[in-house]
Every structure is written in structure tokens, then in C-alpha cells.
Length: 139
Image 1 (cartoon, helix red, strand yellow):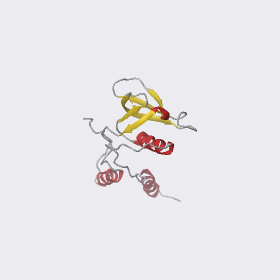
Image 2: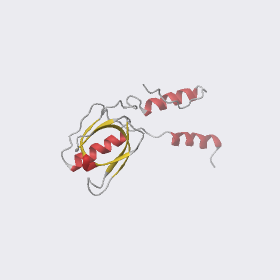
Image 3: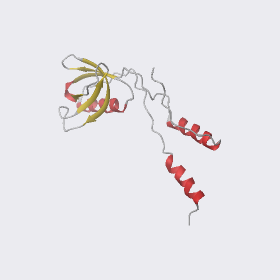
Image 4: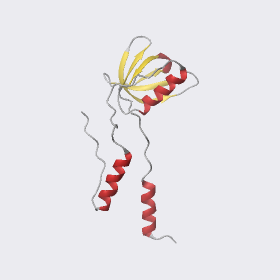
């Protein structure tokens, strides 16, 4: 039979999952020559925690945050959903409409590694301190 102390120790080990490695994409302008390169670049843009600049084939340039994406069987059937910086309206843009992608905004998660947070959490927990989540101030 498991004691309460053993159960709590096991729960703590389940609470902390390994982090993932995040690329530094700030300033990157991906090559988007093939369908697979376009799809891969937009997948990275979806995971990016900053704004991107999209240049559409119509010539329109949009600075926006990508908050969702839908992948279909073709570029025309796939789309990104964005919050433009200049508007509160959500927009949906087909991958096939995008001519250029630039990672222009600051990556809000750059340099904030999960492993560092876990170290701080464990140290404060061992010292008996309460440790909460507090968002970083936006510039």
C-alpha cells in the first residue's frame, strides 16, 4: 500500500514535464519556394510567441499574431487565423495567398526556459516559499 508521502512525491514528479527546445526565430525570413517549405514555415509561425509580418500575393502587408491554423489537402485549403496589430477583427488567410513571411515581433518566450522555471520552483518550494505564476510585463 502506498503511503501519503509516497503518493505526494509521485504527484510532484508527474507535475513537472520536460520542456521543449524553442528556436530563436526573431528576424528570420524563411524560404518559401515549395508547398512543404510554406507549410513548415507557417507551422513555426503558429508556435511563435510574437508577431509576424505577412506579405500577401495582392501586395498587402499585415503585422499580426497567428493564433490558429487549419491544414487541408492543399495550400488553398489551409489557412492561418490572425489578430492584426492594427485591428481587433480576426482574419483568416489561405496559405496560398501568402507570398512572404517575416518573424518581425519580439518572441515573448525567448530566453525563458522551462528548465530554469522548474529550478526556481523547486528551490522556493524546498525553502517553504509560495511560488506563483506572474506574467512578464509587456513592453
